Image 1 (tube, protein in one colour):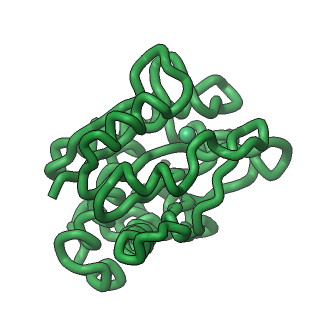
Image 2 (tube, helix red, strand yellow; image 1 turned 90 degrees about the vertical axis):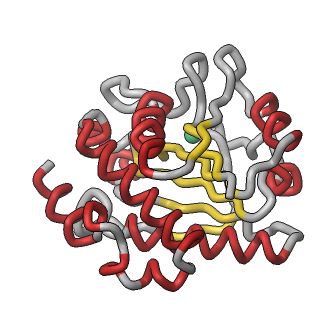
Amino acid sequence: MRIVLNPGHSTSDPGAVGPTGLTEAWVVRQVVQKMLPLGEYEPKRQPAGSRGLGILLLALMANPPDVLVSVHCNAAGGNAGRTADDARIYAWAQDADNDRASASLALSRAITQTFDGLDGAEAQARVAPYLRQDREGNSYSYTPAILRRTARRAVVLVELNFISNPAIEARMRDPSWHDLAAHALDAGIDAALHRGATAATDRSALCASCSSALWRSRSSLA
Ligand SMILES: [Zn+2]
């Protein structure tokens, strides 16, 4: 099973930027680096100097992994962006390949289980169908039809939380937060791919360092 982790954006494409200047690209790179020792993961990053996803997509399509998990931070403008506090796990529901659509949805649900409660009791992770816009409100430059060819079995996009929320941005600087996010993501992937998607609904089945209870108690210390 070849699982590619894509930390979104690059050194020349910061992605979303928090209120004090923390960049999405830096945060997701920390999280993905902490995931690498946890499983058989292959990191694949958008090349420096390229802004769009084109080069990355072409590389993936030329040699598609079984699973692609693209990791991002969310952002929104105005008061909504300053107070939003949730992870959003996107699956490609419009995939014409039914097996890949259901595998993607199962993977997104398993990750949602391990992210439930991320960053505080108020936060709720959610599974959302494919619907992506960039910060200018334009549709992404790729379509689900292109994206589905970047992995054979499942494609999921994870928005860890809102970097536009000052309290979340502060947590996103903390290496212990990167650790927790990495373990939660790894546990969700592991539950879906290696133990069956239903295992993720049993939190006691998750590894000790990323059970939801521990996640809550540790993140409430932050
Ligand atoms: Zn992003």
